[in-house]
Length: 256
Image (cartoon, rainbow, N blue to C red; front, side, top):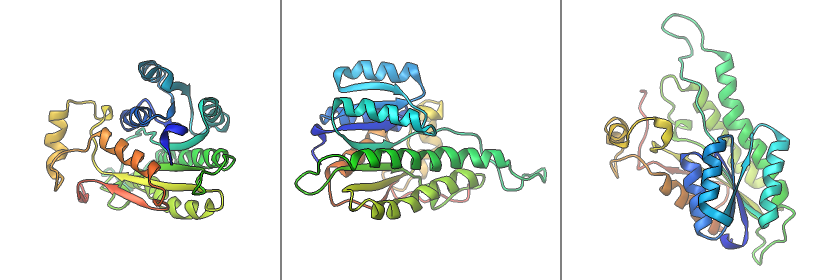
């Protein structure tokens, strides 16, 4: 795919991984929709990138909201890239807490709703839009990149809800790619390890001391720019399809 000839939609586009992805795709020539709920950060990012980006307030769980973001992308160029990089947190809890009480079912549903259902909602709507694009010489019409986590494979104590949701994203990847073969739309996922983003709410040195030292090599946390670089490579490499790529410096989570 020629990134410079399409538009891209990035959910969570005002956040750490999302912002880096927006900047990378814009730098490679794509017109990008910053799809987020953080109006201040989203508008500031779009303004910083000038005519390469627009901010559209987007709720990944609302069909009309996502359709609005898609329409904004298509006004700039055919929608060829969608990236699900939205995030959030509702705390962690054990299945049965130390007080003997069961985990919150509402909390579990919150994680599954945001990370799995929200991802699928964006996937189905963007893929349907891409399927209407003229195919390039290789038959490609677009690519959707979802964000899983290595917690999908080695969830830690207290991560049942988050891990289950991200495991759903992993499980979604191959069958969705197979579903979309005739449409010429590829589906990929990235499973990041520990990446330093504003969500940590601490300085990088402190975060590195706590989490970076556990990464085998390179012995540091990942940078959002490295996630964004992989997104750009996936978009441009037409033979990547139906796969989940771990981006984690060989990290494997322990129980805690």
